[in-house]
Image 1 (cartoon, rainbow, N blue to C red):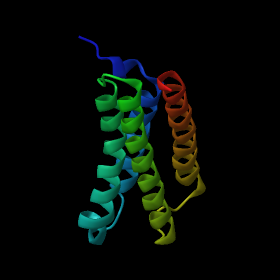
Image 2: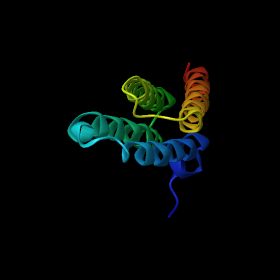
Image 3: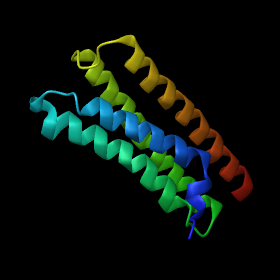
Image 4: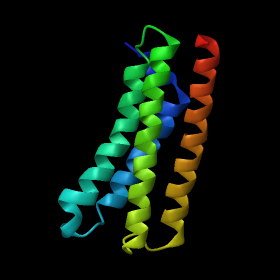
Length: 122
């Protein structure tokens, strides 16, 4: 059985970001294990889960609410990435660029999806 959310581009992008964040967070020092690592991993996972949960909604209005939660979680991920940069955990422009690019793309797509749902649901 295939679920509706699995065909959504924003779902696929959220999985890609999830993989990237988990990979980046494995390199953080032990001092961050119960702080920044768990925070960013929960936030990035929340993006995908809210997209999935919202796809089962009875209305566009309800799905819009869950996409809003996904956007908030994405902003939290971006905040964590900024902390990682500030603390010197992300060294090298390539990883920083990849994370930033994926976040920017996903943010734009989620915003567009939300606008589309709001337009349909009035």
